[in-house]
Image (cartoon, rainbow, N blue to C red; front, side):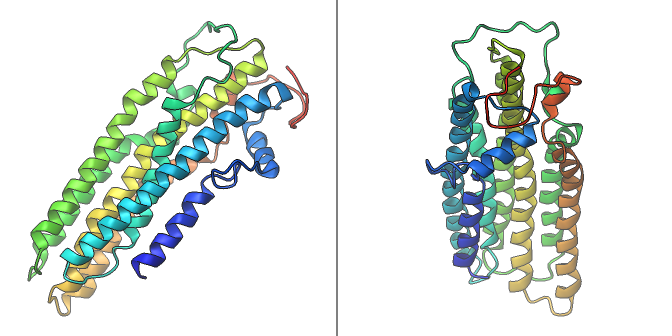
Length: 310
């Protein structure tokens, strides 16, 4: 597919990342909000509706804004690589990678800029300090910590396939430099999420009722899962960049019959690296609201958008 088609798909995905606010606009999708509340397993009284909506709106707007920037960066990189690669094609997927990383980074931006859920409520002192494990599933945490190994493996695999090329097309050194530098930048993005998670955990919790504290836990869980998503998305994008470069070098090099098995090998390498991250991540994401375990056995009332209270 052409780069323009990839860009169009990427833009659609970016706007789909903001379902409650209709793509980051002011319009409120009540059905999407109802689904959001249902997944949290908590009733949303009218007194909490506006604070929760403000958090959702900030997160989704940031996701759309940063995702759009990611599409532009990915598209520019794709055009550059297409030019350096002497007309090789298939770089449009980088726009999709940029959109994914950008949308995930939007959660990081929102985490730093969003106000507390109830900034004027009294500060809550819990008997036991909460940790990331209270807000993020083991599968998601496992996938996050696998990212550095996956990025390193992707770079190493790209170098191995590049070394096996019987002939090197024009501009191959520049392309391999990009195949190494971009994943390392993504690794740096992953590393930035470590202090960011500590910042979220260190923020004071404020509430006047158990239900308000449960919603603060839920929004904190959303924030921490979003931060880990940034790192995990970087882990998915990095091998895509590295191995896309090698795949295009294979297509432009004169490999003859070797093209089939080498191309299949590069594709299989990328799939294996993705599966390594996808299996634990998908198993963790199946849990809708990990923070609900902090309130195990506590029934807050009917799950609706009305005036249910603790």
